[in-house]
Amino acid sequence: MKTDQTSHEADAAPSWFERPENIRRMILALCVACAIVVLADLFYENHHPHFDLETSFGFQAWFGFVAFVAVVALGTALRTVVRREEDYYDR
Image 1 (tube, rainbow, N blue to C red):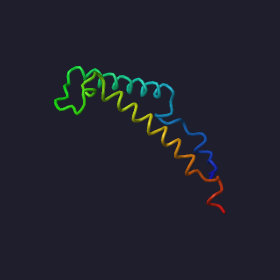
Image 2: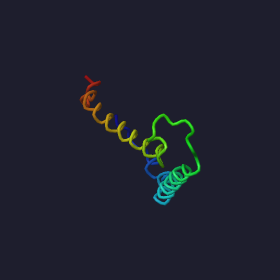
Image 3: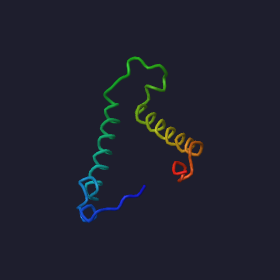
Image 4: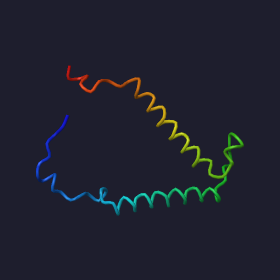
């Protein structure tokens, strides 16, 4: 469903999150935060690992990334199953 933009919405300045310089800052901040968390793994010891692999450096980081990629891939595959025509609810 499309809505018409009023002249106020069309002339509005981009929000803080839409400005290119702030987008770069957010991406940089996210990368720095991720690096800090991975480097913190040097000072943290998992006292009760279930598998030997859990003691490897950066395990939580790469395991989380692999899980994220798997969820996105499964969601993309699920989309082909549950997808409906664009006018499905208008019929």
